[in-house]
Image (cartoon, rainbow, N blue to C red; front, side, top):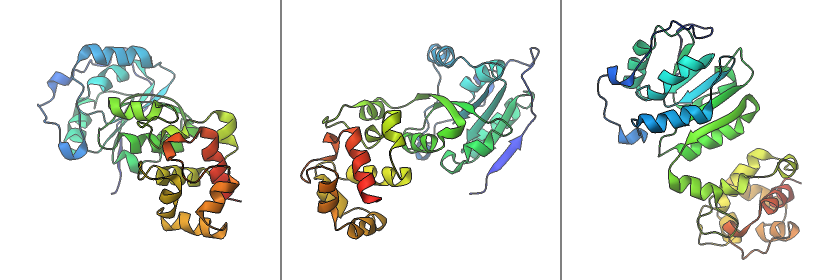
Length: 265
């Protein structure tokens, strides 16, 4: 999909800019296909703003601004707000609602297709705040992690079950593939191929009830080719010191790194 990027203006927010309120929007019903969930509790919104604490010298990326409740507060405090909205109807309303905000930039596109480093130029880094769509929250989080070179920090609202899976300890049945990528800096730096890391961990968790050996044998073709070059999944697992009959949720962070490095030799 072609990105429709509209720079309404640039520069810092002025003290006399108009105050916006989401109640001025024409009522919109959340669209299930987009996994939309509009933020309407002003108490929750204020807690997010307080926790995020945007400043006038910072560039902020907001993913899925929706009706603009959080955006309203961000444009008051941040130096620049880059809002990414995929819904055409909401984008149109946001465009008009914040037309007078000197520090507001709207990008009408799917966040999964965005080059965040390019979107925030001329800034080199930006902070991210988002009330992520339920159906693609994990995918967007992965994109943000992959582009972390230009993202200084993130404040995100996610489904409770998504957070539980990300933070689940090794061995927990709630553990998901993002759990395996919460590596300490030293371990992450030792991974030879980060793209392969994402692919292998994702394949490992594809069928949670199956062993890591079975999941690797049913992994995408690109992974299968690497495994064949190294003698097969069983041999690679043994080289990494991982018993083939273990399940993905039992693997420690270091073991995922060892497995990927064994495949990438």
